[in-house]
Image (cartoon, rainbow, N blue to C red; front, side, top):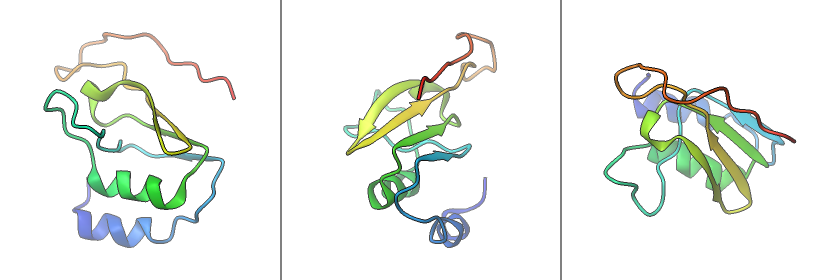
Length: 94
């Protein structure tokens, strides 16, 4: 992963109002989730741009679905932190 200052430069070029935004990183959950991290920068991007759907996976412990404002957030990780398969394929109906 790039450092946040380099990611921010890239994120600043992502337009607002996208239907679907897919990236490797995943946002920080609010409130904090069992000490599992997540990216504050990605959270800020979603709050600013409000895509209809966001798909990411980097933070394995945050796997699942939740909302940030109007955005449906999906962390589609299928591995645990030891890179063992713990979930099956994720299907998102849009």
